[in-house]
Length: 105
Image (cartoon, rainbow, N blue to C red):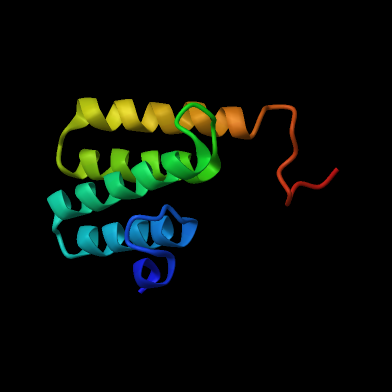
C-alpha cells in the first residue's frame, strides 16, 4: 500500500519501515533468505533517503537487522561486519557527549 501511495520506485521512509517490518515477519516464519533480502532493500532505501556516507539512526538499525539475520543464518563473518557498521554509525549519531532525549541532567 505504501508503494501505491508513494510510488513503486520512490524512496520514502514509510516504505523503508514497512520493508523492515516485513523482514521481521519473514524471520519469525523462518524464511531467513527472504528476511535478508527484505532487510537489504530497507537498507538500500534508507541509504537513498539519508545518503550513503552520512550516519543516520534509521540506516544503523537496518544494518543491525541485516547483521542479526546473518547471525541466524550462521554467516558469522557477515554478521560481525554489519553489526560493527551499525555500532559505529550509532556511536557517530549519538556522540558520547550528547544526551539521549530521555536522559536526565
